[in-house]
Length: 334
Image (cartoon, rainbow, N blue to C red; front, side, top):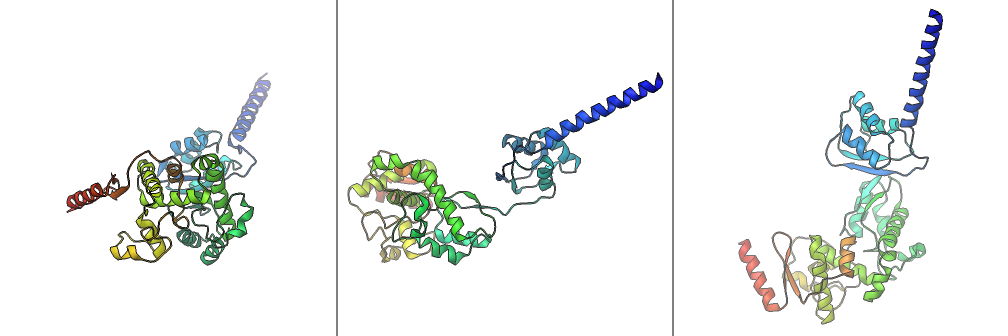
């Protein structure tokens, strides 16, 4: 009888261990077989519980409590800040291993709003994604990308057409592939999404991106973008020169904080002090906030604006009001 109790107890123990093992396996296995890399960017250190919950919400792990317990057991209660890459085809242990050994990714590159193709080329070159000169050379050959499925400029570079975002571009991706990825994103995020809105405003994609790029370079705060857009449209309607400093600097080929009076005379088709109407093309690669502002400007009578110290602008209807605003702002600075 005693032997039967021992055998029964062992059988029960094995059953419990077996069930626990199956449960443990099921909780740690990947959520998917598909390789779908995601960037998880930690701006500051974060505790294991919070990070595990974030990965659970991103559908990267099945059991956040188990991940948190495993990280703490491995001596990692605090996760270091940095850029990590995970995919749902990784097991809980594979994900934990990346965090434990702080294997930061170099596969993701952020292209901020308002960058020119020259600055993008430098960033990609620094990260080993693409050769800078090859990237710029290909940007000057838009006909090479005619199969993208949206209108591209005929005789201008792809300035304005490379969508600002965070991309998965591992080292060695190459210039052409990087350009295609960014062009396809513009097609999805701008051309297809706002095609009807462009038609309603009577704008081509090139005109939209040109206006949006000026807004992007002129405005710091998103809530002001539709108001600056209204100034651009109001001046175009009256055939007034746009007089946008950022276009002057683009024509000069370099950026600086302050535009001098002599700069306004710099001969360039992009100089909107010397030339009426829109410049030949975009002067930067605009983000969605500027694109939306170009499509939905505020209804105003403003024709002028001047920057304040806080990055916002003072808007005026007449030149006299504009001069007064300039005097008041300068007096405030002094």
